[in-house]
Length: 69
Image 1 (cartoon, one colour):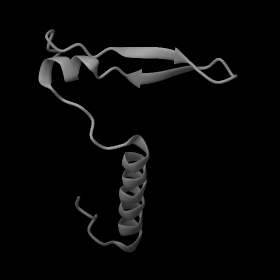
Image 2 (cartoon, helix red, strand yellow; image 1 turned 180 degrees about the horizontal axis):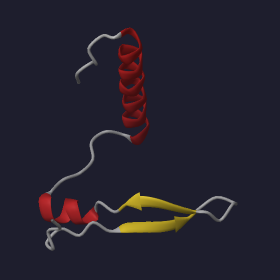
Image 3 (tube, rainbow, N blue to C red; image 1 turned 90 degrees about the vertical axis):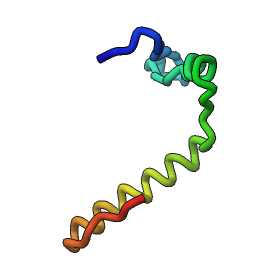
């Protein structure tokens, strides 16, 4: 169910030489209404996500329990 008080806009940006649209979440509404601001830099978040994903795949291959984080 969508909460009408929360605006989850997605902006389309045209970047790069290929002219393909890129999507990114506009978090200004969350910051304005809730005081929320991202604290993890994008590169760190991506590195942590990739490491978690690889650990899950490795655990699946050896039959071990997936790592919890």
